[in-house]
Image 1 (spheres, helix red, strand yellow):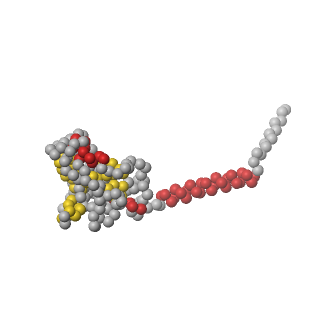
Image 2: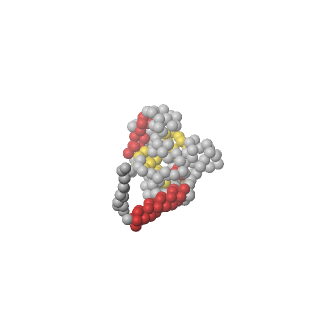
Image 3: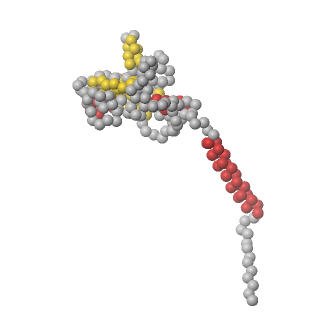
Length: 206
């Protein structure tokens, strides 16, 4: 008959094992607390201007013909597509660079005083369409913003100053066209980067 004996050597003391378990428990509790804090965080920030990383846009202070629109924006900005600025409530207006009016506050102007009369604050904007010099808004782009021919057309957009109609062309924006030799302001938007994403403050039913 054979007898078998096992000898187990403990590599760690009881105190070491206890400390390791306590550390694991502390890490677990910390992770649970962080998840709970994220779960009860408010769905909306207090305001876009208070949220780090909000993308900025502005209406240029200088005028440009259509073939100058792509170079009219400051470094770090580019000629905006209407779809990049379609929802202003998710953006922050750059008042340090952009055109402003007496009642625009921290937002964009809807009109600028010219010789004592209000002039609609409209600017060139990209459409997302292919090469076009024809007149329909949303298609006209002065040959991809290469031409200032007075017989060609480009798309412009502005925020409405008359709120009694209750309807805009695209979301909150009014759109139109101008001939490519017209000197207008330019809608500029910040270049792509890492932005903090959040739902806009204004929810609309379409």
